[in-house]
Image 1 (tube, rainbow, N blue to C red):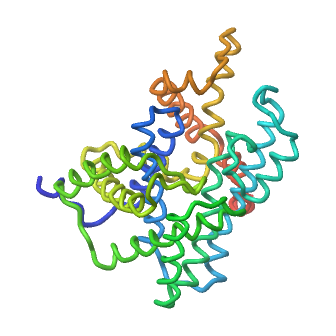
Image 2 (cartoon, rainbow, N blue to C red):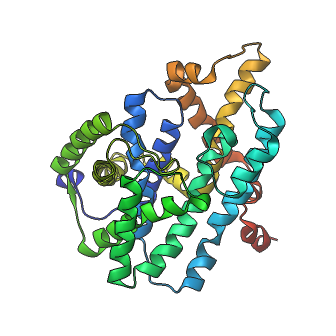
Amino acid sequence: MKSIYKVEKINILILEGLAIFFVMLVHAGTPNYIYAFFSYGLGSLVFARGYQWKERNLKDIIASRILLLQTYYVAGFINTLIFLLIAPSNVMNYPKRVYLTNFLIGRMDKLDQVAVNAIPVWFFLMLFLAEILFNIVEKSRFLLFVSILGSFAFRIFEHEPLPFKIDAAIVSLPFFWIGREWKNRNLSVSFVDFMLAVVGLILISQVNGHISWNNQWFGKNGIISFLGEVLAIVVFVFLSDLVKKINIDRFFLRLSMNALFVISYHMLLGSLIYVGMSLFGLVISDVMAFLNKYWYIYFALDLILVYLAITYLPSKVKALMVGDFRRLIRKR
């Protein structure tokens, strides 16, 4: 019984599944107090990569993580193409080339000038660059220190987000280091740690507001936002152990094992709800107002659609949709 209240070894796959679950939640039009709280959780996905970090040369890093870049461009293009083909005229306020250009150069922060269903894929472009950067800087204490200082500079000083998510990649670097050190030092999380982290994160999210790596927005104070993200890691570490202990981990494991597909297409799958309602003559004039009011219904339906997709779509179709061409070749 005691082990339920103290986490010493992290199940990274469950933690990643939980983080993806909450990514879907914040994209469901949740009220601001919920959105703000969970917006601090993205660093947990980078923390997970740091926890699993292995010493490799740059060539091996690129070879092992090139799929992230492929997913960004393949899934991003599919989402953008669908958006350009079916988006209502009152939603598409710019020439089609603007949406394509912003996608190609990684400016997914221009929320009204990119395909809304493609926005989540920015994370893959950022993570690809971040792993390359961390592989370079982690070999030198000086470079690591300078890069971490740079990450805080981006947090503190407001700036226009850079193309190809370069600034977001730099912002992510401390979380690789935290994940690696957490594993090396075999840190643990107790129930008291979890409760204090929850209370602290509630206070920070309500005082500092929401944050967004994509938009390079860190609330009222970038240092406070960093503290909130560290507390979110503590929360996610504890919850990942808890869901395993109470045997509800299978769904989160499935999300984790299909992470590229789920992150890429959960907003597109969610849009099918709007399509279905339109077929029955129910037209929603203000989609965001509708989501804000009925977010819990939308979120539940989106989870069902995602689960059905990852369960019943043929593996080759899913591989093609995330640009995993090597898996297609291997199975021939």
